[in-house]
Image (spheres, rainbow, N blue to C red):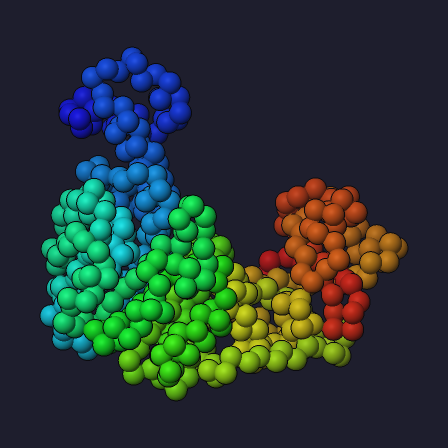
Length: 409
């Protein structure tokens, strides 16, 4: 019953507390309250997650679980750029096929990026498919074809496509989250043969909790060749959100790792054997330059520390600390992460700490490979949180525990 009264109620109360509105439902008999509350909650989520959709009053929002599972606008736009790049030279009539359409956020931005090439949205949930189709029209998307049905059935009927996209469901039959490829639905490993026969490229969205080394090895082993050509570790505001694998029927000899965190992009080719051997700085802090480098969440997740050190001519301060320094005084302004200017370095000796932290009342504390948690270290140092000073508790290559005091560079 999304009548005029219900639509007006949604517009009037979209910034209000949904729980409070639910308690007042009896006062609005003319309003389809269940639908209205869902729209208000959906808009409030979209305001942060999909701002360009939230700016459009006519967007219809699905149940909470679908809003929770859908991609953010930032990650969807990123995938749109991938699709545009991969399909630039492809002439398939069905350029892009999304076999797990869902709420359609990924699909809409990918379809928009490849326009006017045709994009197929496939979703088996009838209600969700109808909602998404109407939203695509509202958003002015003209190059889409919506198909209500099972994605695997559609795949088997498909002749060919430039790119097939899958976002396998990562929940088991009890609603618990799953992370392994084989535990997701559909199981991409079982579909590899058909997928590679039907498309030039396959893009798979996976949980950021998944070990990408294992995922790449499993797919390549199942295919019997190097099928994965790109691994994208995608973060937003330094929080790792997605792991994307690009499979190509003409995979390159080397695997490309792309670590993306907002505007920070670091790209490197690695050996498909996936072996790393970081070499820590063993010459002591006296040889350090004035800057400390902390990789962003995507680099940390990717684990490409040796490649980062090599590319920026940096030294890891130890194998497990994942903090870097240089032996020169040049600031690497394009380093993918946070950059700090070192003020002082102290051991955990009480008197040395007192001198190093003199006058300090509050600081931002991070620990890397350190025996204390950030909270416990804060208590020991008797500091409050915040301010312009940053303290890193970490361990050097020789096993010494130190506190590095610095400010953002």
